[in-house]
Amino acid sequence: MAWFALDDGFDSHPKVRKAGNAAVGLFVRLGVHATKHLTEGHLDGDIVRDYGTAATIRKLLTVGMLHEPGHGCPRCPQPAADGYYIHDYLDYNKSRAQIEAAREAARKRQQRGRDTARANRNGRDSGANLNSNSRQNARSSASNRSENAPLFEDETAGQEGTSRRDTHEGATGVPSPPLPSHNYDGADVGEGSTGSRPASLDDLAPTPIEVDGFQLNDAMRRWAAATFPGLDVDHATAQFVSHYRSTGARRKSWPDAWQKWIRDDAKRATDRRHRPSADVIPFAARQQQATDDLFDRAMARAQARMQQETS
View (cartoon, rainbow, N blue to C red):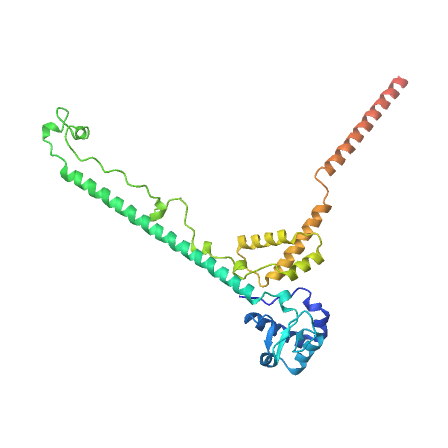
């Protein structure tokens, strides 16, 4: 899913205020249409006229939020004949190639997750079959030992003759017990072991921020540099992405959530710079205490001298 981006200053932009609510509503619908169909801001004339009226289209053209063929904006490409172009579309939105690359990367991540989950399930099934075969072999061996064991007369079963215990020490040939089978983890056959659990398909699936293809673009960088000079926007963005990967939460607008994160990060940095260091207050307290102690000692000596003079 792709998103048509509007920044948090859109509502008060002079062009928006001049265009009016009806024309702005048309602009939003056209932006969503362009993003959905990956037109990179180009619009078919029939779509524009179907969505809006002649008056609202003219307002968007007049304030410069929409361009028609032959326009003079140096930053925007010329639309096709009878078409239109959304002003500065690619400054705020991803290109067709970026969106398709993000979707392909998400598809590959999901496929790797499904392949890993399938391999884990096959491994558990194989382990269960091996363990079942081992138990069956053990039961068969025990049954064979019982059938092939020699029959003892009464006098040989007591203390005076050879006992069953002695046969295992070589007195009578009895088949030796089978070699122990491989000790498979109980978790592989559902016996409640606390061993490591293979990752489920849900654990391996990409998170919403990866599926939605959030990326830091040039327009976002310019906004951060102009609003919060000196802020390490790459580090803050990496923290933002890591946070939403770990929580798995989804936001209606990733750019809006990113801007709030950047503001909060800048505020925390400012608070840290203005926060007094940990030893400032204790040092001042110790200094005051030393001053109080000197005063108390001086008063005590003065009182002692006065008592000596009056006695």
